[in-house]
Amino acid sequence: MTKIRIKDIAEIANVSIGTVDRVIHNRGEVSETTRERIRKLLEEHNYKPDINASSLALKKPIRLAVVMPGVVNEHTFWKLPQSGIRRALEELAHYNISVDTFYFNQFDRNDFIRCKKEFPYNQVQGVLFAPVFHDESVSFLNQCEEVKLPVVLFNSLLDVPSIRSFVGQDAFHSGYVAAKLIYYGMESGRDVAIINMSARTDHYTHIVNREMGFRSYFDEHSDRVNQLFTLDLNGADDCKLKDQLLEACSEHDLAGLFVTNSRVYKVAEFLAQQGSMSVRLVGYDLLPQSINYLKRDYIDFLISQKPEEQAFRGLSSLFYLVAFHREPEARQMLPIDIITRENLSYYQPKFHI
Image (cartoon, rainbow, N blue to C red):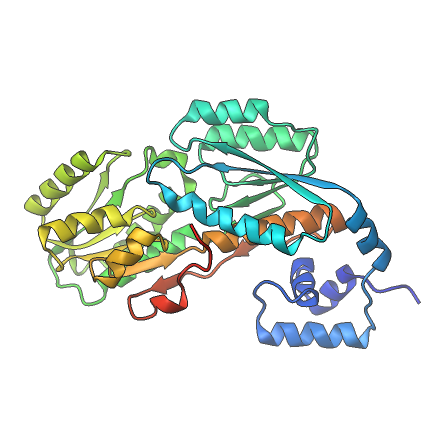
């Protein structure tokens, strides 16, 4: 009889190859029902891993690359995926794997262009990439495609057919959820503000999609909101941020503020200085500063996009693709977790940042 493969099990179970692989190696998130069904199929068909392929992968050198923003000043968000990459390397330590990381300044388009020009396209076998600058990132992906270099994206999704997988959150729906959190219990006739603190929102596809999702909810539920407006702060310093927020508070009866990225703690700091806790504040990610303000009730909700898990899954998927030709799921979507002061202890990062 022909030896059954992971691909065959996936076809029988009507799931992806990546799902079967996660069940075999007991990693990643798979529903218990699906996990049990795949385990039964593996047992029924007497599936055995390819020992020769595994032995070859242990000996064969695999060189991968990570291209992502570096940590700049107080922007500590990118320390979180670095932790996920370290975790993946620890789990893959028994393989002959090396990873070169290429950092670029997320606030400097020219620095990414430099990174793109200097990148060793013909010296690595796969790339894990967190895109920022849209057009330049598409150009980078096209260059990878020209040399048949597989790419896995994380954090922000670009609609480029050549990518092998994306690991991250549905940005539109996370914005939609954020709007719903503000809408609950909101008094009629009040205003809501979206605060974009990125240097240029058009550089970040996921930031744009979060705002679209947020606005979509209030388009469908416009009965309570008087005015929904956006403050594009374009990477403003703390003084300008404070001035803009003071102006917004004086001109509007604010019921809620939605910060579209991880710097929500900057707005929480402003609210704390004003002694105001009557505005509902929602933002992203479990940075230490934001955790502090969540505990003190200046931030009502944090939406976790699990950046550590994104990078961990992304690098793991890329390795198994390159080493074993295991095709990952095209979209590895992570849950939209809503963190409050009450459930924070179950979600705090396991990694030091």
